Length: 262
Ligand code: T3D
Image (cartoon, rainbow, N blue to C red; front, side, top):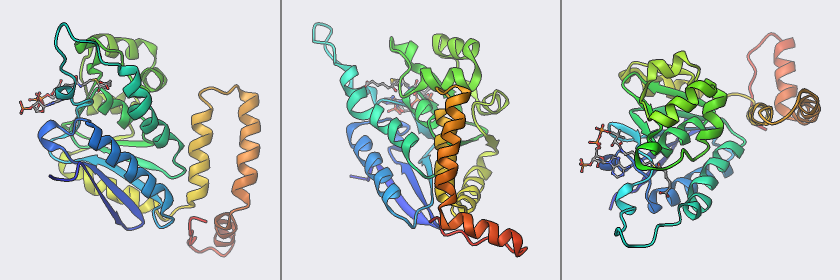
């Protein structure tokens, strides 16, 4: 049995690959477990200063594995609230709370929870052939994994509603044009570009990057006043880091900084 998620550390960052290519990397219990474990490992390893999430084969992730969801017409409905609570919500919460940058390289179709897990990452790159599909409405479900939070914020309510109500695929180019993702790259360039960005992020002041991520996320629910208070608190914390000292020293000495992530 092949591993549902592979994990590799290189150049200061962890590469986490969803690995059920025959099912377009759809989520089953084993993949959920392995992914959470991989995120925990990357979070705890001080040598890992950025994460790269991607998929193997031609898809990124097709959301929930629907072959685990067939039930007899007269059978009891599964409690999907319980699976969200147990599997998808902790996954999205962990991605958002992880105090290191998470880059997602969407190598192919991202559907259902697969699309929204990608959008929960900090920087999203996509292959030109990739598509984002809010597939939920096509099977009688509601977007989950944070989609109803992230989509309207990323693309506005009009587009978010149409995408969720129609399940229309969004091309990678459209996603970039709408500001739903950071960049689209030709398929062959996606991984080299993602690796380059992660290798760069891994040389940066990791603690500050974690605080930046937090500040921007919290702005979604803060007013200006609360956000100014938060910036004060996080700046105080950032200034205590050795990397801040190094950043200032390097600037004054007119040399490149050597950040350690501390
Ligand atoms: O249930 C809960 O716990 C609640 C949480 C829900 C979260 C969700 O994500 S709900 C939404 C689930 N996902 C979908 O509804 C998407 C279903 N898939 C598709 O619509 C299409 O496969 C795609 C648009 C993603 C890709 O289309 P295409 O034409 O490129 O590929 P394909 O031929 O449909 O798929 C290739 C294979 O992957 C195929 O298997 P086969 O025929 O070669 O043996 C297909 O059945 C399989 N596959 C794709 N998606 C899933 C899947 N198998 C199981 N579950 C899937 N989600």
